[in-house]
Image (cartoon, rainbow, N blue to C red; front, side, top):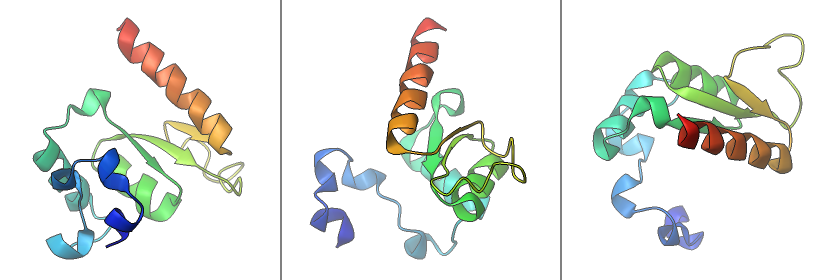
Length: 109
């Protein structure tokens, strides 16, 4: 219901929607990410997981071998989780800059 209420079907195919409760495991279990790989046929070299929860998003994605970008709005990573994610942004604007740089890198490789 949240998917449709937010109008996400404009950008995301419904068959790419993954509800962890429907597959019997929850993040950070790497099985969640493996199921996403299977459903979407992802190329991990070109796949970046963006999450704002270190414990649920970044830990799970890294355990599955994914590239990660942490939206660390509260700057929790500074000093004690440094290097946990492949990249970090602290605001939506910083996240946008990180994504643009990653896009450029992928196009040039």
